Length: 164
Ligand code: 5GP
Image (cartoon, rainbow, N blue to C red; front, side, top):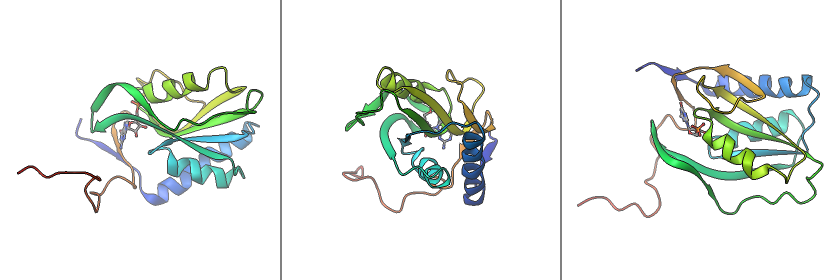
């Protein structure tokens, strides 16, 4: 539908506090936060502060090219994190939204066998997601406007060549 789920910066601040509280109340103590770039960067950073976790890493996975425009499979862009010493460790994967869930699934698969325990936290989860996240702030089936990407960029992408 045309309806949008709008997240403001104020809501983002509250949502990351709430999500962090859920993780803490659950007694989960991650050794590392893995933010999926770019959508998970701000949530993961905010949760790193709320949960007193300095070990915040990122992994760049590309799946969407626009509203409802998807690649066939998520692409993990190098460099991928290496999880030395985390075979008995716990990580918390953080992303903005589990939509199809394909992105989170590919990251979970990447972590398989390298990390002791993997849990996932998202601001939003859609009902058709193939991954059921452990910590979810809100469920929706609408397209979400996030505060970091609801305005046009101030610059064109690097290397952009306008059509003649
Ligand atoms: P996936 O379908 O793999 O779960 O979603 C991959 C990524 O697409 C998300 O992390 C997010 O960056 C982007 N995405 C999916 N659904 C939405 C949405 O409703 N709004 C926005 N702004 N991005 C979305």
